[in-house]
Image 1 (cartoon, rainbow, N blue to C red):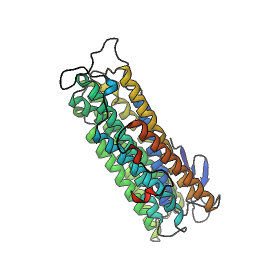
Image 2 (tube, rainbow, N blue to C red):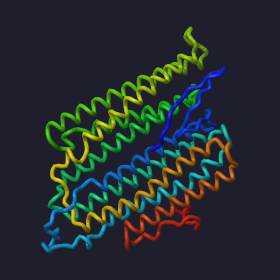
Image 3 (cartoon, rainbow, N blue to C red):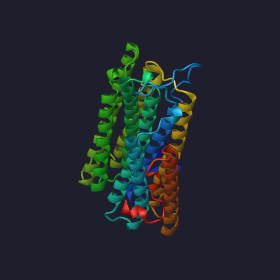
Image 4 (spheres, rainbow, N blue to C red):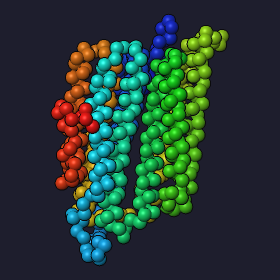
Length: 399
């Protein structure tokens, strides 16, 4: 994941610095886009981690297992179960969107001069890129569950399948909480109280609240099923996470008020820089309290506690699921790498813009290649699988 730590250094007018991945930097020229790229990279890498966990979710099949039956009552070999057209179209659309955003992003991040109005456009792109990648990963999850449902209908009722998707929603909400918390902490460390900074703080706070609402909805014990004791533990874990979010939002409101007061020329009698640093440390403490609360929710809502009866897959189905997840993982990692590189390209200080543009283009090419490979292997023989544009062939502009 995106490791980071915050440290405040004040000299004169109280200029904060932030250490991300061990490297300190001053407030960048394009703050909003840099923060959105870092947040997006963490969110995508968290989603990739879900893929790794999913590969270990279900136990191996028992020695004897009845074959799934077709509508005519005949046994159907799992190897002959083809992905549905609907699922193929969904995955193709997600991959096309992901590639389109990646190709557009290299131009967006480097076309604007520092300090101009295109910072927010670049930030919007970073959000769209991470959302499209997370959406693709979720489509792979749904495909896996759909494949299991086709191959093992007697082991996976509609209610049970919905419970699996609800567990995915819990994980997605937890990822959103952690990513928004990271964005708030970074944004506050760099914030000067100006208009764009405050708007970004407000947007990140709204995203944090939305993720909490999603968690409260998906984490209802009745939506997951399970033992009553586990349901009670889940309710307690969600309440702890809610309390941690409330603490964080309160700390953010205090810092925003302090920044507004400094911007208006008024401040308390004590040193305003010291007071602001103390408020920011409260935000950092609130984020540190949120992390274990979210980890508890993920642990309590895990498959082992709420599985009901575990899926019993054939070796063929198990291997097929592993292949699907294995091909989707490079897509997520390439997207995260692209977002991280875009975050480093916002300052344009360490290297010329031409070198940065070449680096971003290379990463976009890698992402496109990973998407093409993933699509070809997820949807073998499907019409339209070969229609994914190849980087540099001009077809991306016609999507």
